[in-house]
Amino acid sequence: MKTKHIAMWTCPRSRSTAITRAFEQIDSCIIYDEPLGGCWLVNTHTDYEQIDYAADYLSRYSDTNYASIIKKLTGDLPEGKSFSFQKHMSYHLIPEFDKSWISQLKNFFLIRDPREIVLSYWKARTASGLTWEEAESVGGEEYYRLFKEIEDLTQETPLVVDSGDLVKNPRNYLKTLCSKLGIAFSEEMLNWEPNKTRVLSWKNTILEKFSENVTNSTGFFQKSKQENIPDMLMPSINNCMPFYKEMYRCRLIV
Image (cartoon, rainbow, N blue to C red):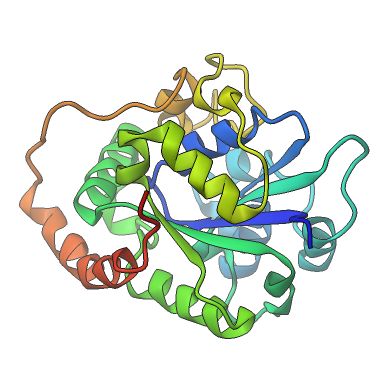
């Protein structure tokens, strides 16, 4: 059966936006970037109107109704589009809400070394004026639990992509990934124009620093230097590492 809807499950700072930008270069693809975000906020924060970033966050969402969002994510595609690429933050999936619709998607999980994720997330929050104590999940047990849940739901082990592997060899890795997902690879996926994007934009909001670099980027890139990690971040890294290693064992190898 031809792939109709692709879901990439991820956690913050996994290079998920860069991969989404790669897929948006395919003309026949429609992007749904964190479509459950608004629904998650209004259903999990009873005092969400008091949160500093709430107004900016919700301004990006025209729909916060779970049922209607799921209908769009699993339903017919707009004219001229042959598949959707959906980027989902794992914590946007509210535990008590129905998840059976996920079995209609071609799912894969994006992982990244927790040392890189946690450091990047801390830096983005600091630059945005948000404290580390307020941080949502950056992967770990919750993320791994969802991986196993989708494995049980679909009766197959989801693809796992390590973004550290992908950025070292994006052409070959994306070719293999596209083949596994049942879609055609395009050379256009390797480069894009800065600022010209349909992905979720936080420009001119309190969250701008979270997407600034990838919005201004023109393709995949690796960081050239190793950075020191503050001691205060080590508990989060240590909590995430065992679950990262479990998923790493299942990663796509090219």
